[in-house]
Length: 273
Ligand SMILES: Nc1ncnc2c1ncn2[C@@H]1O[C@H](COP(=O)(O)OP(=O)(O)OP(=O)(O)O)[C@@H](O)[C@H]1O
Image (cartoon, rainbow, N blue to C red; front, side, top):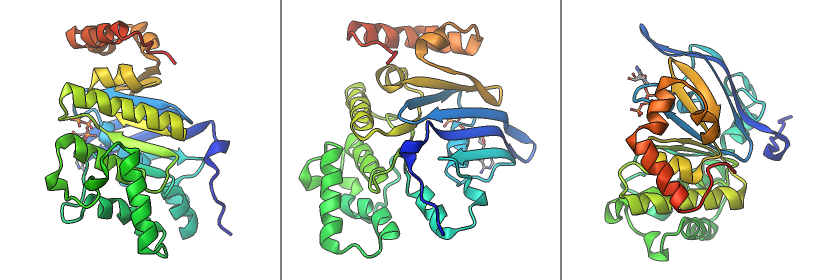
């Protein structure tokens, strides 16, 4: 008998223990630990190639780790024997890959309906259309975006459409891989606002990979820093600023870090929630 997950019963949504990822001789992660708390937006930062995307892929089962354990809502994907339980776990998360990753031959509405059809094959077309229209509105797209193809949309709209598809199954957990990459600063700020708003209203837990310091200040409750093949620090921005690690100091106190902090202060928001 399949045991279905109740995300609200978990204080820790994701627990990663002793994760190792190796590709040939290249060691990307070595004994990496991380906990993502339920209801938080956790920013994941680190230099290029430090394994942020590989970590995300390991959590959602797209990458089989060399060693270590990944638990989502107390379950480990590769040890779930029951197909129904595995589907139940997978439908708890939505993923927005880098660049949106929409199917170019499908309209926005059809893209949103892909996961719905997969998980709920008996839904009729009228209901699928209603759900897609609801998701389109939820991410702030106009109603006429639904029948459009990705190539007909601006970069910011494509991101929103990708987010709508990630939210199709009403997930408890949202994975975002560099959601604001390629957006102009105003578009990026609006997207940050949208993520924060959706997370607050839907009670989402968000795993957010970013290089964007403004995004960290505007949206994240805590930030995890990847370096030296593991998570070297995790905490609020003020907590990270208090650590002496050179990469963390360079990152937050470098010119771009200072400018993001100043801008954040100027808008009167505190990084700690
Ligand atoms: N399937 C794979 N086979 C071999 N090497 C891989 C594979 N996937 C990732 N890597 C390597 O793992 C390392 C980490 O990659 P990853 O994409 O996770 O970095 P990242 O921190 O997300 O980088 P960026 O910030 O540039 O997106 C890179 O050196 C990459 O080349």
